[in-house]
Image (cartoon, rainbow, N blue to C red; front, side, top):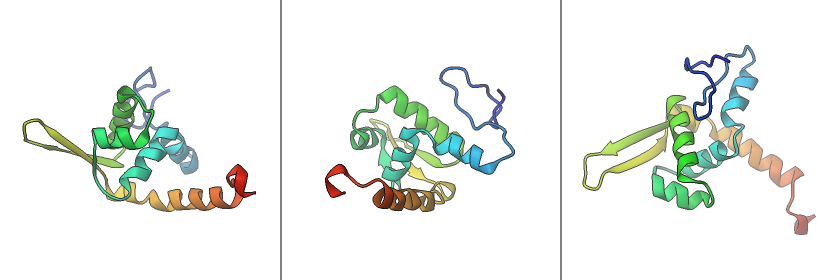
Length: 121
């Protein structure tokens, strides 16, 4: 399958499929568990790789790196590299990434209303 970014999905390469339906394209991008959690943590501001990994818990460095590259390529996340020793890299949501906050809020509301914790039913 050819993707919008001109790549094919072969192992580590992830792109958004060329689909007529905007819901399908959006779901492909944000449908991954880690993508949504990364966005959630970046809503409040920029974080470094290690800070994101710690906040996410059990994500492997390889998976986090792949998802951040995907988000950067899609224009959701920007990466800033500072010329310091040791090098410092920070990730932040772009304006396009900030637009996902409404989706995140709708998911939060749905979860609270329809998917309560077992002891709160």
